[in-house]
Image (cartoon, rainbow, N blue to C red; front, side):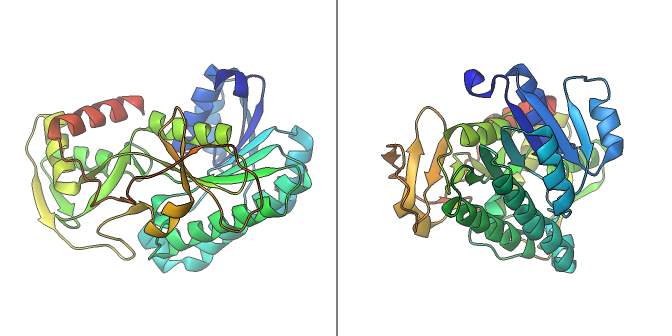
Amino acid sequence: MKEFYKNKKIFITGGAGSLGKALVKKLLTLNATPIVFSRDEGKHALEYGHLKEVQTIIGDVRDFNKINITLKRVNPDFIIHTAALKRIDDMEMYPDECIKTNINGSENIARAALQNDIEKCILVSTDKACKPVNVYGSSKFIAERMFTNYDFNSVNTVFSSVRYGNVIASRGSFAPIFINKINSGECIHLTSSLMTRFLFTLPDAVNAVLGALLNSQGGEVFVPQIDSYSLPSCIKALENYCGKESKTKEVGLRPGEKLHEDMLAETELDFSYQVPNINLIQIRPQYTQKEYQLFEKYEGPHFNSELWVKDNIDELTSLFERGLVDD
Protein backbone atom coordinates (compact mmCIF):
# COMPACT_ATOMS: atom_id res chain seq x y z
CA MET A 1 0.00 0.00 0.00
CA LYS A 2 2.83 2.41 0.83
CA GLU A 3 4.29 2.27 -2.69
CA PHE A 4 0.88 2.91 -4.23
CA TYR A 5 0.31 6.11 -2.22
CA LYS A 6 3.90 7.37 -2.08
CA ASN A 7 4.21 10.93 -3.50
CA LYS A 8 0.54 10.94 -4.53
CA LYS A 9 -1.68 13.97 -4.01
CA ILE A 10 -5.06 13.01 -2.52
CA PHE A 11 -7.95 15.46 -2.52
CA ILE A 12 -10.26 14.72 0.45
CA THR A 13 -13.70 16.30 0.56
CA GLY A 14 -15.01 16.66 4.11
CA GLY A 15 -11.41 16.34 5.19
CA ALA A 16 -12.03 18.10 8.51
CA GLY A 17 -14.46 15.40 9.70
CA SER A 18 -13.65 12.33 11.79
CA LEU A 19 -12.84 10.06 8.85
CA GLY A 20 -11.11 12.85 6.95
CA LYS A 21 -8.75 13.58 9.85
CA ALA A 22 -7.92 9.89 10.23
CA LEU A 23 -7.28 9.59 6.49
CA VAL A 24 -4.92 12.59 6.57
CA LYS A 25 -3.03 11.10 9.52
CA LYS A 26 -2.61 7.76 7.74
CA LEU A 27 -1.70 9.26 4.36
CA LEU A 28 1.10 11.30 5.91
CA THR A 29 2.67 8.05 7.16
CA LEU A 30 2.49 6.75 3.56
CA ASN A 31 4.42 9.79 2.26
CA ALA A 32 1.36 11.06 0.40
CA THR A 33 0.19 14.68 0.20
CA PRO A 34 -3.35 15.20 1.54
CA ILE A 35 -5.37 18.16 0.30
CA VAL A 36 -8.33 18.94 2.57
CA PHE A 37 -11.43 20.46 0.98
CA SER A 38 -14.18 21.46 3.40
CA ARG A 39 -16.27 24.41 4.48
CA ASP A 40 -15.21 24.24 8.15
CA GLU A 41 -12.44 26.83 8.33
CA GLY A 42 -12.35 26.59 12.13
CA LYS A 43 -11.35 22.93 12.00
CA HIS A 44 -8.80 23.70 9.28
CA ALA A 45 -6.92 25.92 11.69
CA LEU A 46 -7.46 23.67 14.70
CA GLU A 47 -6.55 20.34 13.09
CA TYR A 48 -4.07 21.30 10.38
CA GLY A 49 -2.71 24.74 11.20
CA HIS A 50 0.52 23.21 12.51
CA LEU A 51 0.99 20.82 9.56
CA LYS A 52 2.80 22.38 6.62
CA GLU A 53 2.42 19.13 4.65
CA VAL A 54 -1.38 19.49 4.57
CA GLN A 55 -3.01 22.00 2.24
CA THR A 56 -6.48 23.16 3.31
CA ILE A 57 -9.04 24.71 0.97
CA ILE A 58 -12.36 26.23 2.01
CA GLY A 59 -15.13 25.07 -0.28
CA ASP A 60 -18.47 23.31 -0.54
CA VAL A 61 -19.27 20.23 -2.63
CA ARG A 62 -22.48 21.99 -3.68
CA ASP A 63 -20.36 24.47 -5.67
CA PHE A 64 -19.26 22.81 -8.92
CA ASN A 65 -17.30 25.80 -10.20
CA LYS A 66 -15.22 25.99 -7.02
CA ILE A 67 -14.49 22.25 -7.16
CA ASN A 68 -13.59 22.36 -10.84
CA ILE A 69 -11.29 25.38 -10.52
CA THR A 70 -9.65 23.89 -7.44
CA LEU A 71 -8.95 20.55 -9.13
CA LYS A 72 -7.40 22.32 -12.11
CA ARG A 73 -5.13 24.23 -9.75
CA VAL A 74 -4.01 21.50 -7.32
CA ASN A 75 -4.12 18.64 -9.87
CA PRO A 76 -4.50 15.69 -7.46
CA ASP A 77 -3.97 12.06 -8.40
CA PHE A 78 -6.92 10.72 -6.41
CA ILE A 79 -10.14 12.00 -4.84
CA ILE A 80 -11.69 10.55 -1.67
CA HIS A 81 -15.20 11.95 -1.35
CA THR A 82 -16.26 11.79 2.32
CA ALA A 83 -18.33 15.00 2.58
CA ALA A 84 -21.97 14.29 3.43
CA LEU A 85 -24.94 15.17 5.57
CA LYS A 86 -25.52 12.01 7.58
CA ARG A 87 -27.80 12.49 10.61
CA ILE A 88 -30.64 10.14 9.77
CA ASP A 89 -33.49 11.83 11.63
CA ASP A 90 -32.45 15.31 10.45
CA MET A 91 -32.36 14.12 6.83
CA GLU A 92 -35.93 12.83 7.21
CA MET A 93 -36.90 16.39 8.15
CA TYR A 94 -34.75 18.14 5.52
CA PRO A 95 -34.58 15.88 2.45
CA ASP A 96 -33.95 18.89 0.19
CA GLU A 97 -30.70 19.67 2.01
CA CYS A 98 -29.70 16.01 1.87
CA ILE A 99 -30.22 15.95 -1.90
CA LYS A 100 -28.17 19.13 -2.39
CA THR A 101 -25.13 17.72 -0.57
CA ASN A 102 -25.25 13.93 -0.86
CA ILE A 103 -26.58 13.62 -4.42
CA ASN A 104 -25.90 16.90 -6.22
CA GLY A 105 -22.62 17.38 -4.35
CA SER A 106 -21.48 13.87 -5.26
CA GLU A 107 -22.30 14.49 -8.91
CA ASN A 108 -20.32 17.75 -8.77
CA ILE A 109 -17.30 15.80 -7.53
CA ALA A 110 -17.71 13.08 -10.17
CA ARG A 111 -18.22 15.55 -13.02
CA ALA A 112 -15.21 17.63 -12.00
CA ALA A 113 -13.08 14.49 -11.63
CA LEU A 114 -14.08 13.40 -15.12
CA GLN A 115 -13.35 16.80 -16.67
CA ASN A 116 -9.94 17.00 -14.99
CA ASP A 117 -8.82 13.43 -15.79
CA ILE A 118 -8.33 12.50 -12.15
CA GLU A 119 -6.82 9.00 -11.98
CA LYS A 120 -9.17 7.58 -9.33
CA CYS A 121 -12.22 8.95 -7.50
CA ILE A 122 -13.93 7.03 -4.69
CA LEU A 123 -17.18 7.75 -2.87
CA VAL A 124 -17.38 6.92 0.83
CA SER A 125 -20.85 5.42 1.21
CA THR A 126 -22.64 3.66 4.07
CA ASP A 127 -24.36 0.42 5.05
CA LYS A 128 -27.58 2.45 4.97
CA ALA A 129 -27.27 2.58 1.15
CA CYS A 130 -27.89 -1.17 1.07
CA LYS A 131 -31.66 -1.81 0.93
CA PRO A 132 -32.33 1.82 1.98
CA VAL A 133 -35.43 2.83 3.94
CA ASN A 134 -34.56 6.44 4.80
CA VAL A 135 -33.58 9.66 3.01
CA TYR A 136 -29.90 9.43 3.99
CA GLY A 137 -29.54 5.83 2.83
CA SER A 138 -31.44 6.55 -0.38
CA SER A 139 -29.20 9.52 -1.15
CA LYS A 140 -26.10 7.38 -0.75
CA PHE A 141 -27.63 4.57 -2.83
CA ILE A 142 -28.18 7.04 -5.67
CA ALA A 143 -24.65 8.42 -5.25
CA GLU A 144 -23.23 4.87 -5.52
CA ARG A 145 -25.16 4.26 -8.73
CA MET A 146 -24.08 7.63 -10.07
CA PHE A 147 -20.38 6.85 -9.51
CA THR A 148 -20.85 3.49 -11.23
CA ASN A 149 -22.51 5.22 -14.17
CA TYR A 150 -19.76 7.84 -14.37
CA ASP A 151 -17.22 5.03 -14.59
CA PHE A 152 -19.24 3.44 -17.41
CA ASN A 153 -18.87 6.69 -19.39
CA SER A 154 -15.28 7.44 -18.37
CA VAL A 155 -12.09 6.86 -20.36
CA ASN A 156 -9.36 8.03 -17.98
CA THR A 157 -10.93 8.20 -14.50
CA VAL A 158 -11.74 5.16 -12.35
CA PHE A 159 -14.86 5.68 -10.22
CA SER A 160 -15.86 3.41 -7.34
CA SER A 161 -17.56 3.43 -3.92
CA VAL A 162 -16.91 1.90 -0.52
CA ARG A 163 -19.53 1.30 2.17
CA TYR A 164 -18.76 1.38 5.85
CA GLY A 165 -20.60 0.89 9.11
CA ASN A 166 -20.77 2.69 12.42
CA VAL A 167 -17.34 4.00 13.36
CA ILE A 168 -16.59 4.05 17.08
CA ALA A 169 -15.86 7.57 18.36
CA SER A 170 -16.65 9.29 15.07
CA ARG A 171 -18.81 12.41 15.04
CA GLY A 172 -22.35 11.34 15.95
CA SER A 173 -21.31 7.91 17.27
CA PHE A 174 -23.33 6.59 20.19
CA ALA A 175 -20.24 5.44 22.13
CA PRO A 176 -19.04 8.84 23.49
CA ILE A 177 -22.65 9.82 24.26
CA PHE A 178 -23.28 6.62 26.20
CA ILE A 179 -19.95 6.94 28.04
CA ASN A 180 -20.87 10.44 29.23
CA LYS A 181 -24.24 9.20 30.48
CA ILE A 182 -22.72 6.18 32.25
CA ASN A 183 -20.09 8.34 33.98
CA SER A 184 -22.64 10.98 35.02
CA GLY A 185 -25.26 8.45 36.13
CA GLU A 186 -27.80 9.68 33.57
CA CYS A 187 -30.27 7.32 31.94
CA ILE A 188 -29.32 5.99 28.50
CA HIS A 189 -32.15 6.26 26.01
CA LEU A 190 -32.10 2.91 24.23
CA THR A 191 -33.96 2.92 20.91
CA SER A 192 -34.57 -0.85 20.95
CA SER A 193 -33.08 -3.80 22.83
CA LEU A 194 -33.29 -5.77 19.54
CA MET A 195 -31.19 -3.30 17.51
CA THR A 196 -27.91 -4.48 15.94
CA ARG A 197 -25.19 -2.47 14.22
CA PHE A 198 -21.97 -3.07 12.27
CA LEU A 199 -19.06 -1.56 14.24
CA PHE A 200 -15.41 -0.85 13.57
CA THR A 201 -12.66 1.57 14.56
CA LEU A 202 -11.46 4.63 12.68
CA PRO A 203 -8.18 2.92 11.67
CA ASP A 204 -10.22 -0.02 10.33
CA ALA A 205 -12.40 2.42 8.38
CA VAL A 206 -9.32 4.14 6.97
CA ASN A 207 -7.84 0.81 5.88
CA ALA A 208 -11.13 -0.10 4.19
CA VAL A 209 -11.23 3.19 2.24
CA LEU A 210 -7.56 3.13 1.23
CA GLY A 211 -7.74 -0.58 0.42
CA ALA A 212 -10.78 -0.01 -1.78
CA LEU A 213 -9.08 2.87 -3.60
CA LEU A 214 -5.97 0.74 -4.12
CA ASN A 215 -7.95 -2.20 -5.55
CA SER A 216 -10.55 -0.23 -7.52
CA GLN A 217 -10.85 -1.13 -11.18
CA GLY A 218 -13.96 0.87 -11.98
CA GLY A 219 -17.66 0.97 -11.22
CA GLU A 220 -17.63 -1.38 -8.26
CA VAL A 221 -18.82 -0.99 -4.68
CA PHE A 222 -16.54 -2.30 -1.93
CA VAL A 223 -17.86 -3.72 1.33
CA PRO A 224 -15.67 -4.29 4.42
CA GLN A 225 -16.14 -7.57 6.28
CA ILE A 226 -16.80 -6.40 9.83
CA ASP A 227 -18.70 -7.75 12.82
CA SER A 228 -22.03 -6.56 14.18
CA TYR A 229 -23.25 -6.29 17.77
CA SER A 230 -26.52 -5.77 19.61
CA LEU A 231 -27.10 -2.46 21.35
CA PRO A 232 -27.53 -4.05 24.84
CA SER A 233 -24.15 -5.77 24.38
CA CYS A 234 -22.60 -2.44 23.41
CA ILE A 235 -23.95 -0.89 26.61
CA LYS A 236 -22.60 -3.76 28.70
CA ALA A 237 -19.17 -3.42 27.07
CA LEU A 238 -19.18 0.33 27.69
CA GLU A 239 -20.07 -0.32 31.34
CA ASN A 240 -16.95 -2.52 31.49
CA TYR A 241 -14.97 0.27 29.82
CA CYS A 242 -16.20 2.86 32.35
CA GLY A 243 -16.20 0.54 35.36
CA LYS A 244 -19.77 1.57 36.19
CA GLU A 245 -23.27 0.24 35.68
CA SER A 246 -25.87 2.19 33.71
CA LYS A 247 -29.57 2.89 33.66
CA THR A 248 -31.48 2.45 30.41
CA LYS A 249 -34.90 3.35 29.08
CA GLU A 250 -36.27 2.03 25.80
CA VAL A 251 -37.68 4.93 23.76
CA GLY A 252 -38.30 3.49 20.29
CA LEU A 253 -36.74 4.01 16.87
CA ARG A 254 -35.95 7.48 15.60
CA PRO A 255 -37.44 8.58 12.26
CA GLY A 256 -35.75 6.67 9.45
CA GLU A 257 -33.98 4.12 11.66
CA LYS A 258 -33.85 0.37 10.99
CA LEU A 259 -33.62 -2.34 13.63
CA HIS A 260 -30.92 -4.10 11.63
CA GLU A 261 -28.57 -2.87 8.92
CA ASP A 262 -27.43 -4.51 5.68
CA MET A 263 -23.95 -4.19 4.20
CA LEU A 264 -24.25 -6.68 1.32
CA ALA A 265 -27.69 -7.57 -0.05
CA GLU A 266 -28.84 -10.99 -1.23
CA THR A 267 -29.33 -9.54 -4.73
CA GLU A 268 -25.65 -8.47 -4.82
CA LEU A 269 -24.19 -11.91 -4.04
CA ASP A 270 -24.05 -13.03 -7.69
CA PHE A 271 -21.76 -10.10 -8.48
CA SER A 272 -19.56 -10.26 -5.35
CA TYR A 273 -15.86 -11.19 -5.25
CA GLN A 274 -13.29 -11.52 -2.46
CA VAL A 275 -10.46 -8.99 -2.66
CA PRO A 276 -7.21 -10.82 -1.80
CA ASN A 277 -5.14 -9.94 1.27
CA ILE A 278 -7.75 -7.61 2.77
CA ASN A 279 -11.21 -8.06 4.30
CA LEU A 280 -13.09 -6.43 1.43
CA ILE A 281 -15.81 -7.68 -0.91
CA GLN A 282 -15.97 -6.22 -4.42
CA ILE A 283 -19.50 -5.87 -5.87
CA ARG A 284 -19.19 -5.52 -9.62
CA PRO A 285 -21.76 -3.60 -11.69
CA GLN A 286 -24.14 -5.70 -13.73
CA TYR A 287 -24.07 -3.75 -16.99
CA THR A 288 -20.37 -3.04 -17.60
CA GLN A 289 -18.22 -4.63 -20.30
CA LYS A 290 -15.07 -3.96 -18.28
CA GLU A 291 -12.65 -6.86 -17.83
CA TYR A 292 -11.85 -7.14 -14.14
CA GLN A 293 -8.79 -8.54 -12.44
CA LEU A 294 -9.40 -12.15 -11.45
CA PHE A 295 -10.65 -12.34 -7.86
CA GLU A 296 -12.21 -15.41 -6.31
CA LYS A 297 -16.01 -15.45 -6.20
CA TYR A 298 -17.41 -14.62 -2.77
CA GLU A 299 -19.37 -17.68 -1.63
CA GLY A 300 -20.54 -16.53 1.80
CA PRO A 301 -23.92 -15.24 3.00
CA HIS A 302 -25.23 -11.70 2.65
CA PHE A 303 -24.19 -9.18 5.32
CA ASN A 304 -27.06 -8.42 7.67
CA SER A 305 -26.28 -7.10 11.15
CA GLU A 306 -28.76 -9.50 12.77
CA LEU A 307 -27.29 -12.46 10.87
CA TRP A 308 -23.67 -11.48 11.62
CA VAL A 309 -24.20 -10.46 15.26
CA LYS A 310 -21.25 -11.36 17.48
CA ASP A 311 -22.02 -10.62 21.12
CA ASN A 312 -18.77 -11.54 22.85
CA ILE A 313 -18.64 -8.87 25.57
CA ASP A 314 -14.88 -9.19 26.21
CA GLU A 315 -14.09 -8.78 22.50
CA LEU A 316 -16.51 -5.88 22.25
CA THR A 317 -14.98 -4.17 25.30
CA SER A 318 -11.56 -4.53 23.66
CA LEU A 319 -12.95 -3.09 20.42
CA PHE A 320 -14.24 -0.02 22.27
CA GLU A 321 -10.91 0.38 24.08
CA ARG A 322 -9.04 0.38 20.77
CA GLY A 323 -11.60 2.53 18.99
CA LEU A 324 -11.85 5.20 21.65
CA VAL A 325 -8.08 5.47 22.07
CA ASP A 326 -7.59 5.69 18.29
CA ASP A 327 -9.80 8.75 18.08
